[in-house]
Image 1 (cartoon, rainbow, N blue to C red):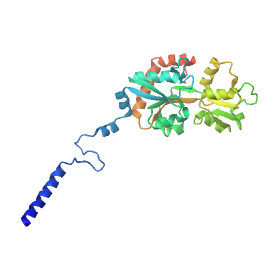
Image 2 (cartoon, rainbow, N blue to C red):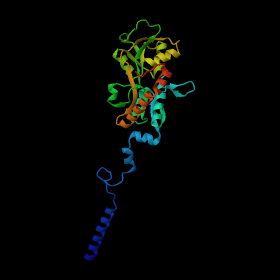
Image 3 (tube, helix red, strand yellow):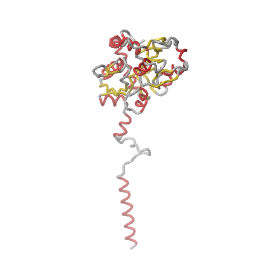
Image 4 (cartoon, rainbow, N blue to C red):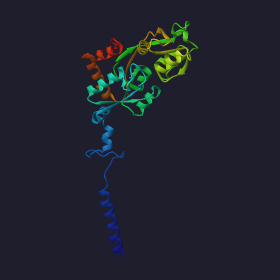
Length: 280
């Protein structure tokens, strides 16, 4: 009986040992030890965003689609504009297809954070608080902020005059910061067109908006009852925006931008939309 029991114990021990030999060896964090092949998930994790974009053959670009002349829809419904055209040319130089994903301005950065798109092309001002969280391309356009009022307004002549007045602004724009700094009461709007509409109908007193955008708008619709009364002294430098940690993608975009400027393509796009070079 004792011999039978002993034989049973030995057999059990051998079975456990053999089972242990068949178990895949891993490190404490679940990663394979040196010399073993990584899983597909680990390979994907190590892959850079630029590698992923090139592998898929497309780059996802966040933009408003309501911000003329930078990103808007023409009468046929096609998405167009300075930023759209420039971003399309950048994608072409990178050998990938641009896929534009339209988003309201106030949700633009949240869309980038959630990886809904790979970069933002929407004339975004480069400023220190944004640079703490995001990376920017080299500047590709410079434009001053301008203060506009209704044509009947004779009291507002400069930014210092807007204290206590209602200003139509998108909530997270650097242009809104200028309005706040000068004591205006912010009235939220979705974009330039809505800001001009509420100003023209006297539902607000002022709006501070991109100077190039307003000049183009008034050139196309000179009957609009608003006027520009002041230009902000510090012009904004704007660039494409990226999530932190994607240096290879930033470098690839900057390389494409430099090529576009060097071979004259930038000047052609700039003159098409503004009649001049807006890079400086």
